[in-house]
Image (cartoon, rainbow, N blue to C red):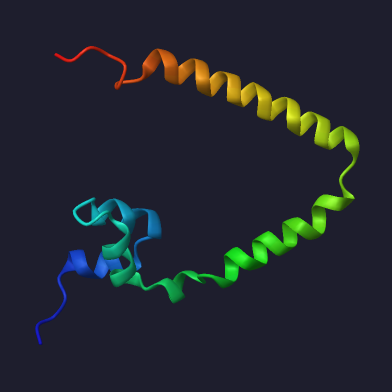
Length: 96
């Protein structure tokens, strides 16, 4: 077996975001990423489930003011999103 190249050694130490960028979209990206680093190395699904459980535990302790502010920010974000996407959509622009 040959020694790993410098690129292979760096990819082993690279963060997940670099690995995602490296995989490209040849097969959708996810399949190649899963084959490269394996889902168990990312803590899947344990970290996701624990995160949801922690949030569900903390949410009932929040005040009504917090929920009202969250709703306001959510509404503002939805308005900005819809306004921006209507004016910048490449699907609505005429074909060239």
